[in-house]
Length: 353
Image 1 (tube, rainbow, N blue to C red):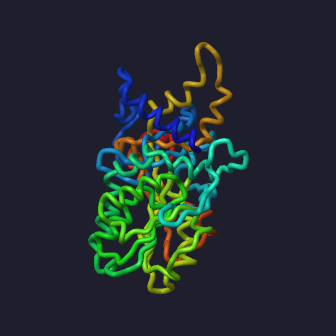
Image 2: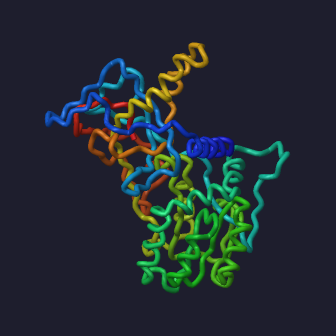
Image 3: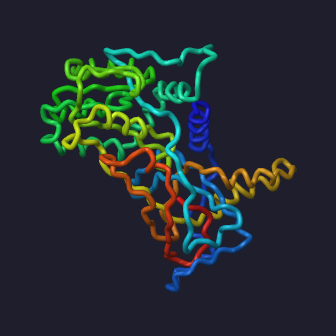
């Protein structure tokens, strides 16, 4: 996972520095805005995948940060009604920082006992990942407004920040009047978070604890509020929601406790992007003169992270998962969901987002 994130950053950097590769995001030549509401999907158009440049789940009006799923080969014409495949909330089962309390985790180089979870947490020790998240202004300011506009909920309350990273949410909570914040993270970024908290004069209000949420002990029996930025790609992928649910069940005051955010909804829509299909799928037909089309099947199955131009969306968007963080269980995170998309123009469909 660490390599995967590094590779994503490299690809994103290369895209920004390359010249002469401007993509045409205008609707395909087959598009007609006629009002018949049907979708023309040519059987010769294999569904493509997309690569997105950033975290998922935000929209700035021009670019939608969302995950793109390719349509399985041979199912391009199944637009009207299909059923989604089960989606599990993957990786690590925890997220936690480090501060006055230090629960060591296996992240030293050369340790033969390192697990995938250790590499996952270690990937969050690099400042670049946190820089990317902090620069996601839509997401960060949404958290800021949700906390600061609800000072009456935070005033004199004990707050637990699950997966605190740089400590930004903990500091928002202090600004909102929290009596004390316990910020937990399992990566070494917590060392920088401790300095950040100190530099901003909040050391007396924020206690940073390094360790896995499932393994640490808090100095208090219960907390009033849990805050966490747990969302991953496609909402659940690589997310820490399992850890947030564990923290909720163990530390949050029953009935009166609050989880921020408390609701999450996943939507699905379909897009046309012939240029993307050409770049990511048809590419394998001729690679330096060699036929590598055998990799097409693999490329079609792999979900990709990319930025989708709103002009490419050809259907309405429908909710396929609604999560209530106050009540949901881990079992609710593996799901199937029937859905129906209505075409908004006559066009090809290359992938779901």
